[in-house]
Image (tube, rainbow over all chains, first blue to last red; front, side, top):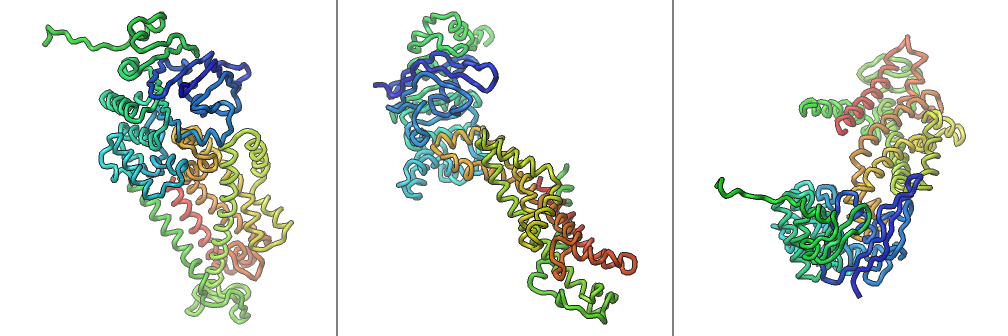
Amino acid sequence: MSLLQVKDLNIEFHDHIIPETVVYDFDLEIDQGEIVGLVGESGSGKSMSAMAIAGLLSRHDMTKRGSIIFDGTDMLNCSRDKLRSIQGDTLSVVFQEPMTSLDPLKKIGYQVGESMMLHRPDISPEDRKKRVIEVMSHVDLDEPEKLYDMYPHELSGGMRQRVMIAAAMAITPKLLIADEPTTALDVTIQAEVIELLKHINRKHNTSILFISHDLSLVRSLCDRVLVMQQGRIVESGSTKQVFEHPAMEYTKKLISSIPKVEIDDTDC
Amino acid sequence: MNKGKKNINLILGLILAGIAIIPALVGIFWTPYSTEAMDVSLKLSAPDMRHLLGCDNYGRDILSRLMAGSKITLIIGIGTVFFGCSIGTMVGALTGYYGGLIDNVLMRVNDVLFSFPSILLAMVFVSLTGAGNLQLVIALGIAFIPSYARVVRAEFIRNKNMDYVMAARLAGASNLRIIFVHILPNTIKVLVSSILIGFNNAVLAEAGLSFLGIGVKPPEASLGSMLSDAQTYLFSRPSMVVYPGVALILMILGIALISKEIK
């Protein structure tokens, strides 16, 4: 059985007079160790679907139909306590904006170790510090001992995103949801973060749901790709198949929008 | 605003507040004379070497009463802020974080409290419970709850949808943990300046109530009751009004300058 099974997920908002459906009939399966890409333009419902999978959507003001089974748990109907025991333990999320996703008043080490503190209370503070520093060095942060006692404002964007990944990986989740983790970073840092995700996937056999509108990154990272448009999945398949033989007109347009750098040899 | 000018505000504020507060702090442990001992032979006497600020209409040493009065005013101000701020922060945190029904109910109660002038509300409360320092603190504290609740609620609403809160929730943090460990420390910055302004309002309200005779009970000195005693002698001995008035002004101006700087 696969790690994550989403069937017929529909998300409908009720905070206005007319209900508004933002995700229609969303189906997704992720096996252990698989990297799945979810692409689409802004507002196509990809983040909404991911938030629903992570159990982050509020329970009032919206209805959700369908089912999300993660690691044997029904994420839509289980108790909040059960949900909390999964969040941060077997499931983690890395957000888009590294500048705002760290608590400005807490030290880096505390934030990386928080999920460990909450889910593995049997680990002593000294051991926890050791393991946090270890995790931080695994995500290629230099001088983790020094960073441990620093505050988020002292770090660059790329470093903060690594800290976020370290926090998400602190107790080795089975599924890592990366919600546009590279959008706010510059290109060289993007490539490093992608390498890091690949490395994590290989080393811990962690499944990754990678959400992006950057198709070139998706192509270099993912095994399978889903394309979303206006709340619907319009195409899905292996990365190779989708990129080389796109079936839908929309996918073709998306692929043709990847910027290509062409260097004219005669100028050199 | 440039940094040099800001520092002048802060330093000036600290100096002014210091002039007003240090005698009050000394007054906790020591005053030159008893604040309540009357001596008719010294009635309305002018300042001399023994009584530096002279004596009042009952022959009590004004300097001693000024120190003790500042102390009482200071304690009531701090008590009021502590009481109002702790309850107001709780209310603001709960309403801001949870929203929905609890928000509607508590904030409507808050609006009702807010719609009365706080000094009027405190007067009604004191007239129900009787005068006394503790009653005064509770009355003023209740009257000041809404202003803190509003500030904290707004900060919670602003913070609760920020990514770091999402990230904390995803780490498996419970609601209470998110409220107290993550969001509350982030509201301190805004809370501190409203605490300072609230302290000023509390000091003024206490002086007002004592001036009207429903605050601190008569033999005990407070800046407000000293002003009240002095109003009969406004023209014959204006210095009796000037000392407590100046002490009040220094305290409030100093704190206001500091809070302006901290903002």
